[in-house]
Amino acid sequence: MTSPLDSYYTLGRTGLRVSRLALGTMTFGTEWGWGSDKETARQLFNAYADAGGNFFDTADLYTNGTSETWLGEFVAERGLRDKAVIATKFTYNGEPGNPNAGGNGRKNILRAVEGSLKRLGTDYIDLYILHTWDRVTPAEEVMRTLDDLVRAGKIRHAGLSDVPAWYASRAQTLADWRGYEPISALQLEYSLVERNIEREFTDLGTQHGMGIMVWSPLGSGLLSGKYRPSQDGGTGDGRLEAVKGSAVSAFDKFKQRNWDIVNELDAVAKAMGRSMAQVALNWVANRPGVASVILGATKLSQLNDNMAALSFEIPGELKARLDAVSAPAVEFPYSYFRDNQQVRIAGGVAVGGKPATYVPAIEIPAVDVLPAPVAQSR
Ligand SMILES: NC(=O)c1ccc[n+]([C@@H]2O[C@H](COP(=O)([O-])OP(=O)(O)OC[C@H]3O[C@@H](n4cnc5c(N)ncnc54)[C@H](OP(=O)(O)O)[C@@H]3O)[C@@H](O)[C@H]2O)c1
Image (cartoon, rainbow, N blue to C red; front, side, top):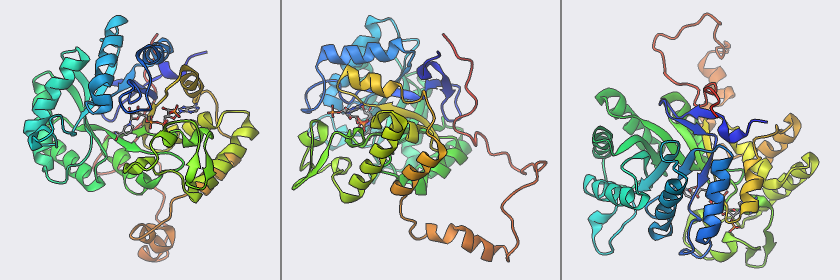
């Protein structure tokens, strides 16, 4: 059987072909207290590459540089640089006390890219991603600098992570109108326990050619089902236990709403005879706008479980149960865009559908972020 990892899709509007499941390397290294040692990280890398996966995600921030360094070494050991699609990120500060050694200004981007290239042991990055909005740098400066890096041959494509939708929209508009390299990926937290991006980013990505790369698809491990509620929120053996009390919002997962989702996921997974992790990953991978789901693992057994997540379909009635228990609240202004308002706007006349022969005056490119698979190589 073909592995789901060696079906490649083009990312955003680019010709770059990537696996629908990417390998996250934030767990490469023990510096943060919840990662893997080098031999385990190498096993994770090799298992993913052997299954045909070609899409690797890292960042200069991760495990203080160890993640990039080991990823570069593992790619070199296997002679995979031409096959590997390497995504890395800039924003976080690399030199305490120096405010320009962080952020999204030109000075830091040009500093950061040299560091990443050195640690990765490569002369180009396939996808260079702004890690987090710094609230100050104009999109003009970021987009011009990323375009310069493409022209200099140091990066191939550009992406944004953890930014407001208006900022990504402005960045893409600048690219379209000024001929800069467009944004081809939006890297965002998305899972059954974190669906807030559906309000803006699904439409943004699908309408404007940016494929969503999902991070923390298991809510940092919560959706594997190994945590239980406890007096101080929750308990279990894994990252969420190790980071208790952290100020990072993504780690704040022990909430009643999330326990309800975990319980329903447990029931659905049991009904299907699948692991909870597989069902949660399958659910998010098949959401509109999702280009690739970044897998995280600290053990080979976890990765093997997760890599099988696209080898089945969730039956409609079970998927509906997951959709319902995790549905995000519809708040203003989104409450004004629902069908009941549209009927009032259209004077009671149905205007939803279009005749099959309808051709829009302006073609919007790449409406589907996941177009038909390209030839399955290998
Ligand atoms: N752009 C951003 O801001 C951003 C932020 C976060 C992550 N990321 C990227 O996204 C990647 C994935 O994020 P993530 O690691 O948070 O993803 P995740 O899938 O939500 O969590 C992964 C963790 O869950 C546990 N786990 C995974 N599979 C399991 C299984 N089958 N059974 C039991 N436990 C399992 C493991 O941790 P334990 O063994 O410790 O329980 C694993 O490290 C990262 O590596 C990174 O590349 C990007």
